[in-house]
Length: 297
Image 1 (cartoon, rainbow, N blue to C red):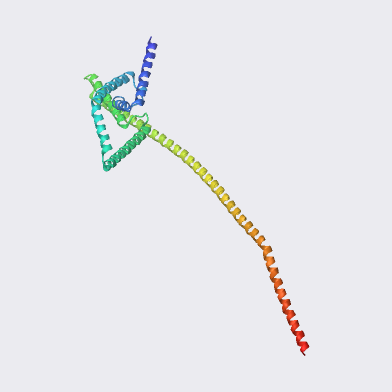
Image 2: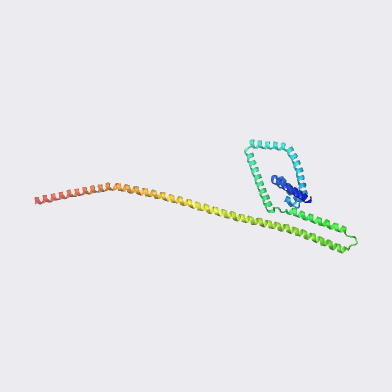
């Protein structure tokens, strides 16, 4: 029976932890309330599995009550919000150009502020992880010191009145030193865990940075090689086009020159024949003149 009860209690605890995790993923206000509740009552540990069943039940009951109150407030304020939204839409629709510009500027500034807040929250959450915050750790240590002091007071009250005062003072000092040592040890453990988490995060960031840099270099080399291949292909095609054009021009000039050669030969031959005939006529005339002179003598 005891084992069965333990199994049922474990199942209930697991169901409650899963319910808290599911509600955190589904609702941001629920997650915020859970973190605040853990900071106040759970030593800053955000994992539901690390808390007992009673702690989870109390939180769920508190969250349900707050949710009911918020629903009542939302139902009472819904009409006023709808009226304000209608008024703002009317202003945006019928407002001047300056009003629209101012509205766009405000909306852009709000978007930037939201993005900065998300980045800040994501960076802080990635570094913290499941570790308690510094404030929560200090609160837990203070509660531990207060509990130790309370135990010390109880021990003082439980001692017999006839005990030696020096031994009592020495024991108190010893207990106080033990409490201080525990506090320092807890503080050192928290700091060491944070340092380890930060180092691990930095290592992961460096690895991711190196991987992305390598991928970027590979993509850049591929792009350069592709660009060079395209440029080479383009230059070759342009050079081939120019060679073809020059070849066509040379062939055209050669064809025209070959066509002009016979006409040039004929014209030069006719010119030479004309010159020879003129020379022959001149020689015949000179010969006739010489014959006439010889007859006259």
